[in-house]
Amino acid sequence: MKKVIVTGGLGFIGSNLIELLLNENYFVINLDKVSYSSNFYNTKEFSKSKKYKFIKCDIKSPKVKKILFKYKPIGFFNLAAETHVDRSIDNPDSFIQSNILGVYNLLENFRTYVKKYNSKLIHISTDEVYGDVLKGRSSENYAYRPSSPYAASKAASDHLVSSYVRTYKIPAIVTNCSNNYGPKQHPEKLIPKLIYNILNNKPLPIYGKGKNSREWIYVKDHCEALIKIFKNGKLGNFYNIGSNKNLNNLQVTNELLKVSKKLIKVGKNVKINFIKDRPGHDIRYALNSNKIKRELKWKPVTNFKTGIKLTFDWYNNNKKYYNSLSKKDIHKRLGNK
Image: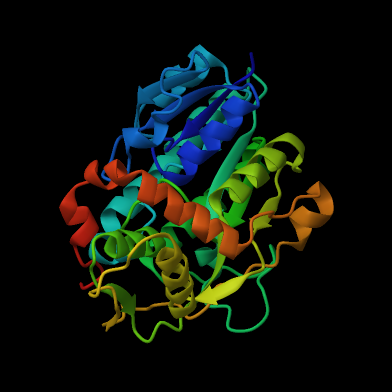
């Protein structure tokens, strides 16, 4: 059976990716250091599968090399990262440690491994590396202009991977995706935070005037794209992955309210509450994903209206997910420093 490694597999995108890889009959080794955003609830459906192995491991650890040579994976999906912009404002150090130094350690060990065995690294990144895109859409040739410590750390990791491709000829691909939403996302992020508050009759906090625009993609569509890139993508290339559908935060909130009112009785305290904006908040991200559509024949299949209903349904039917989290991680206001 073909083996692949997924780092950060207790997280949101990682756990959704593992589910699809298992369905395609890969043996998946999940490496996760078990941070605040890691959640064993995310893997409960397949944790006892004979095709699944969890190993507690930080990508900065020397254990990465031992694991590579023990399991001999044909693929390595790197989703291990600190990802929340607000937390990067409060504590940039953890982002430097994980997103830059962690990726450096991973690359060094992967470089050694591929001298002996065939494999491929898929490094998953973000549209935030491009910074504000006020008009049009950023293609893979668009200059990196990160605004936050988070985006800067991801930009650095992308450049590291690219440099190892050119200098050491490692087989790797970088992907940059737009804002994901869907089941199993930590409620520090907008949509699961809003759903938690709707389910618990609390106000809905929106930064500034709610006009910040993001391109939203359902997580399963993103994961399908990653598998397609792993199978058929060109080594050394960058691929944007997006939905071509932009909504600002106020539009997202109103759409979510429409869906929730059809499914549950919404409490009287569930009202939009505009709060102080975070520092350096980018106005708009927007990707040009024509390359992956043209070369790999991929396109997203879940529109926002369908995806947001699926997402709300999952959280409404999995209230234990919120119970598995620290309440301070749900309620704490970040990005004030």
